Image 1 (cartoon, helix red, strand yellow):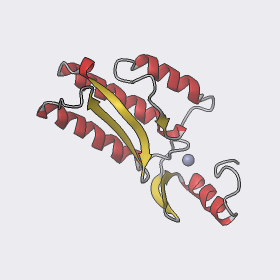
Image 2: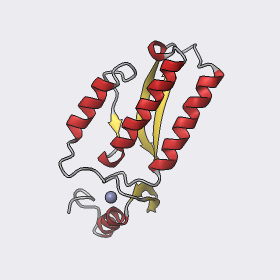
Image 3: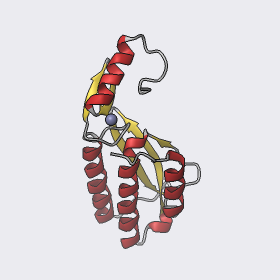
Image 4: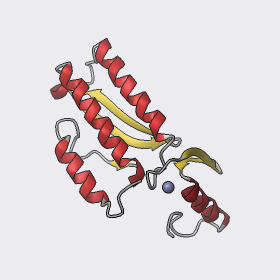
Amino acid sequence: MLPTDFDRDTFIQQLREKRSRILPDDIVFSVENGWLPLIAESLQQIEEALDRYGWIEKASIRQIKEKLGDLRIYVRPRRESASFPEALANELSIIRNSYTRRSVKTCEICGDAGELGNFEGYYQTLCPRHANHRRAWIAGGRQGDPFDD
Ligand SMILES: [Zn+2]
């Protein structure tokens, strides 16, 4: 559950400053607020792994997004022709899988416990309350924002 005074812009700004070594200035956080704490944790682990292998200057986050209802964070060598050493690639893949698994149990809107649902072909991980909002929004002809109270 996010704190009631949670502020998206402030959270993202602080995260950008804290993780400036791996976050390009133009990176977009293409997810709703409920997953931002997961992203913060994941970026910390990615940064620590890159540091341990001496790759912090040579890698960066390429994309942060939701796809088919789960969280995807892509980290790549800065040089297209480079590739991560196998041990580092394995660590990064363990981190990625662990946060993908957690994202499909975390409501993307509010951060409460949720599950991955299929909303007429649109996949999203939502708590029961926000899943109801989305179903009601679909039933009501998709007017306005699905998550406005
Ligand atoms: Zn929710």
